[in-house]
Image (cartoon, rainbow, N blue to C red; front, side, top):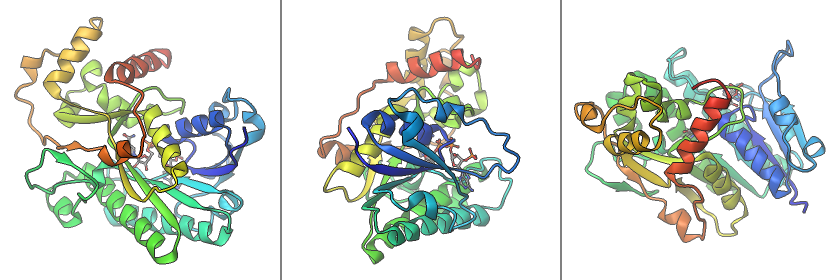
Length: 328
Ligand SMILES: NC(=O)c1ccc[n+]([C@@H]2O[C@H](COP(=O)([O-])OP(=O)(O)OC[C@H]3O[C@@H](n4cnc5c(N)ncnc54)[C@H](OP(=O)(O)O)[C@@H]3O)[C@@H](O)[C@H]2O)c1
């Protein structure tokens, strides 16, 4: 079945590459953008060699960079939908937060302007993050889409590593939704929590590595898992495709299938993977950090979307993939 042509930005990334695989399997033709590689050093065979039927003809690769707002025009022209997944990620603070945020916003607005110019794009799905959904120090067990991270609160209270990511995701998602409202362009956003599972991209995805902190013995990341909300990468890709196709999609969609305390996670991992020296739940009681409230997916589920994967599959798939790739 030919479902038409769509564009995915940032095809080298963890989620975008899995999304491209899913779109090709669903019968879409895909244009994806990757950053320019003047020395031609990058191996893109993980994309060009995807086993989906007709992938060789149906996948076209373009170059574009968020620092050059006009660079996405060629990939977008002729597409009926755009998944804007690429984002600057800088957890090591190599660049100031303002630079990262400015790049994310101006690149995104350039993409949205290209969608308007194209005359073919019917809807844009922007990949935001649960980092943009927060109760900003107020009491809350569960957050729906009405919760927004407060950038001033983030500036004061968040550790530098997460500051630029949280601020850039929040301000870019707001800018994208506002642009859509002002210009009559359908923009919907997906806000996933920690994305776990297998990967086809060359890099070891940060969220998979962090979710496996107890397996890998990465003590410094245990605090990220105090009340961790997670979703399988294939469910994230399916949710993106679903909101592109769902006729009445509007606004934001949280995307989270499971939430677990650190102790429960260690109990689960210790029972399921006895080959790894998982720390016992009791030994984790003193771990300090923020317990993030859960993220409600009610809005997405009310549309008829169903998650297909449990925590067992998230971790089985992540661990098997890491073993195959030599990370475990
Ligand atoms: N993984 C998660 O748990 C998670 C959770 C919530 C939301 N998200 C969101 O999902 C999206 C994808 O995340 P991911 O985990 O797949 O991250 P990733 O693997 O690091 O992918 C990021 C992508 O963005 C591209 N990129 C970075 N800077 C760029 C620039 N200046 N111009 C063009 N492209 C650029 C990267 O290209 P290079 O390969 O060339 O660096 C890469 O393709 C992001 O928007 C992220 O905020 C992820």
